[in-house]
Length: 237
Image (cartoon, rainbow, N blue to C red; front, side):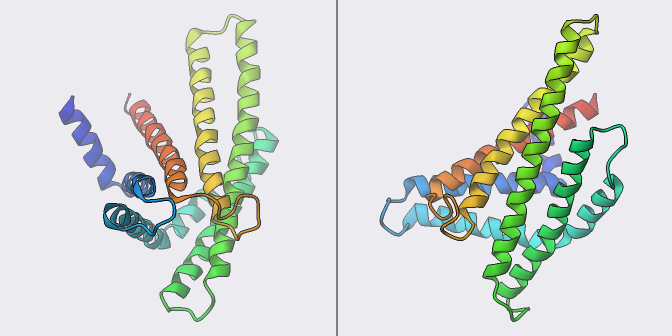
């Protein structure tokens, strides 16, 4: 059992997406621990300060690695296109808008990164704000898409109860309902953080303490890891 878990972790760390999920969880976990241990009014030092510094370094590493994500996102957007014709029209529309927001996010973040690195002589803050706004838009579109899919799945389950559908079909539908609910929870946690990172004055922007940002990010990261492991297990069967 332990050997299987270790091999699974090694396999995840060897793949870029798997490693990113683990680093993301560690990043937010350190921020949660550092923020919780730090005093409410004193600058963090000692162990809390070290944990927050590690969190910042891990986040910077993820930002740098995302410099190479544009082509993968473009490939996915092109393969999806306007969506399969047999898919619900609203789901297709939300998915296309989601892909557009994701595609625009990367170059905006790259410009902000390049400005901070001194490669480009432009102000980075407006580009960070724009990339965060695009991320928030993507999350909101994803939530709306999952809510629409949930509505369709709930209707499908009601139809199953009134018909002689197979238990396997009902089980698969319930599994999809669970996956969409978890996706909504994950995106809601990330959306809360995204709004916090927008300029002050917009909703609760700038009001979260570090521990709350870490908690929401940790919840989202653990949900993503769980869903990825479930997908991996289903593909292996």
